[in-house]
Image 1 (tube, rainbow over the protein chains, first blue to last red):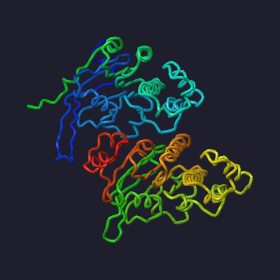
Image 2 (cartoon, rainbow over the protein chains, first blue to last red):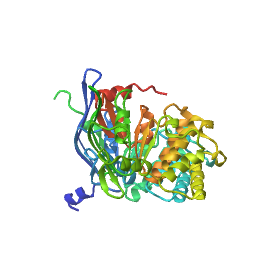
Image 3 (tube, rainbow over the protein chains, first blue to last red):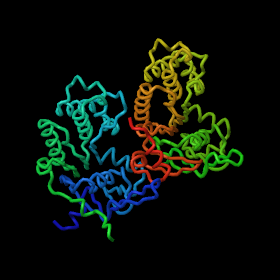
Image 4 (tube, rainbow over the protein chains, first blue to last red):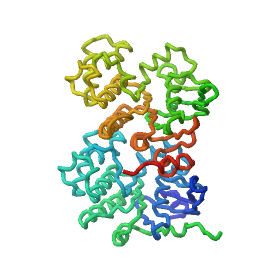
Length: 237
Length: 256
């Protein structure tokens, strides 16, 4: 296959991405955190972001999701440049194409767990009954006891919240997925379930970018690693 | 896609003082935009200018009407604007008593808005009122009670039912969860989110509560001294604020 052919097939394609934080209320301090970042992920591929704590793994992931603003460069996800897109285009992208499993579950209080998990599907216009069936399947697979499904996850344990978050992130078959430590705080049984979900997503052609502190998990599901330390701005320059 | 609302150069002065100035944005069908800022930042003035309650000194508020397409509502006739206020627009006040008729029954409050757009059949009106009470989680047996006998949270839900019964396309909300207990707020937020999704509503929500906009709004506009200082995707503005004022606002929130 030609190189240009591969170029076209990348689902996630970053080049020349730079980011600094400007602290306006602290003397206008400018903190450059990333420069010249590039990354290409093809459908069916899983790439692990690596680098020491503070190297910018989460920052890069948040920029791909459009949660942090990039100061320069291009962040193409399914053809949309997240670095330049209008809010409504990013919202549509997040609804249809780009999923994100963060480390924290953020929900409207009092909403039942089953509805929290079904929500991404409802937002896509999937029939309520179908969405709930899919949500129930995922919750059962992730060993969340059925008696908890009608309760809000806000009072659940850390591990349970993390599993609800994962169920929600996998409810829709996103063509691109961002996973921020998806196996953290999970017991071996649930860890295995999450790894199976990731493998299944790859098999159906999802392009995945992940942060895994769990070496064995990373070795099992990731096809290659991208060390973000390479994108650290040179202080001496 | 045509924006539902196109706001251009809106300005309102109170004598020499600026209420709001140079406000511009487009709102698309199904979008929910939050407007935040401290007291006196001009957010309520802006909302009232957009909703036709205040006449701006300059600018256009172009609404994509069902019949005639995009029309500037600032220059449209008063009767036409009022008709819009009863049909395609809705306004949810912070204090439910400003948006309800306190001496009319709950069912009557909902029915009145239906009658204003031509509904006449008593049975139909009552049935729709009961349906809407159910949708905002008010028991059917309260249909004949006056809102003065309702709790604050129930009054607010009744106000929402009264506003949404005519299936508007654009809802203006001024601090819809202000002054309510946090548990009541949560229930209202959940209700509003569900209704926005099911009805495909567009909404403008003025609030000073950043947690509320994070959960309800797709987009966010930050105002200070009558001007928009920053706008964008809600989570981006809150998690990676660029303007000094937004950075201050976000860092000032107490963590629970």
